[in-house]
Image (cartoon, rainbow, N blue to C red; front, side):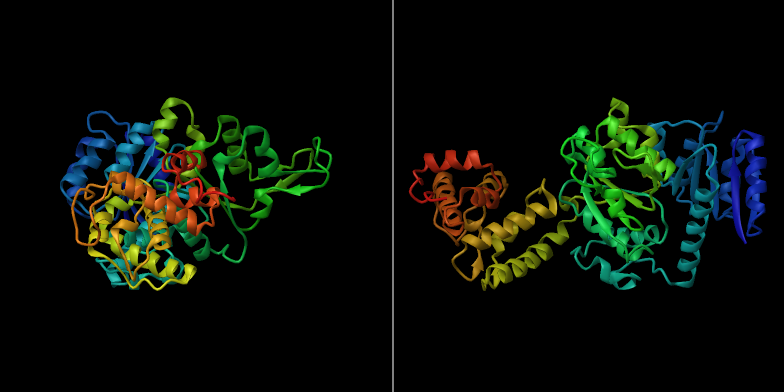
Length: 460
């Protein structure tokens, strides 16, 4: 049987949890009210799961977590707390806490957390989860085929995603722009039992407050001026399936209140209607912001955060998975060769060196755009450094290195040549050229005038 240790300075809480767990007839439960004795008990290695209160005198929950980490004790911990303390939550997560729950305890959430921990331990014991994770050991390998990686941390994330996907919990995906948050959300949906229903992706920050209700909840005919027919919103469109809300940190506070209401009551009203509609939707949210900072500033609601962050996934930036850069570059080379009907056979060593020394603030999306742009202007059968956009060469540490693939010329000359090639490819369409170059149309027009490229840019 699974052995669980409960540590809390409140005997009433210990009694409640002990009875709750023993009713399952699956667990052996031991309780401890005096946290000063925790270290000796934990050192014995008899327990599979620790359920730990944070706010205790003498030896706090944080002290115990630090002790577990420092002494490399293998023990999955579920933290309970009566206070919505964001700093405490961050500290607990950093110290390896499996889950963080507010009192009063959500019984369903607690049992799910325990079952997941126990299940993973059993699989590990049977050898069904190897100590060194690999792509081949994934149960749903095919759903990750669009996430190109050989990075060990990413593969670990895939295994976590498989576990989270099998529940119906909300998931919060953390990661910088361009790091692949929507691809992970799609993978969760494809594994889940909602896979045969809709996956609806929405940029949560794209809607002004006055448009949100109509777009999110839908509206009835005549609900406002211009509402000439009934319209279903994103929630109804995703009914039975998954609603992915990207950039959740951009939502205004009034909109956050409305979203929280849907999560709490699992129902909503169309604009202009008094009939409530049930919301059978799984919410996956994503953010490139530090929501803990946003909560401290008062621009993101704590109650909404805890509703969304039942399960959490942190995606690494591309600069933290340098081993994937060459793999991704060659993948995009093949992709855009096919798209543009080109036959560029390889990427030069000097170009690869440039890519590997760059920090990629735009992550995988930026790398994709770089290869896309370079393929368009490359004239040979090898993708060379001279075909890279000017902004990249200007900001890359290796720009000053002289190589054999091109004659030395000024930065301005390189920029002029590159812009001219893109304009020709875009048939002098400035809007399309600016998009490929990754700059604004106004900026492009200024550079066209600067380099006297007006003739080439005529006739948009």
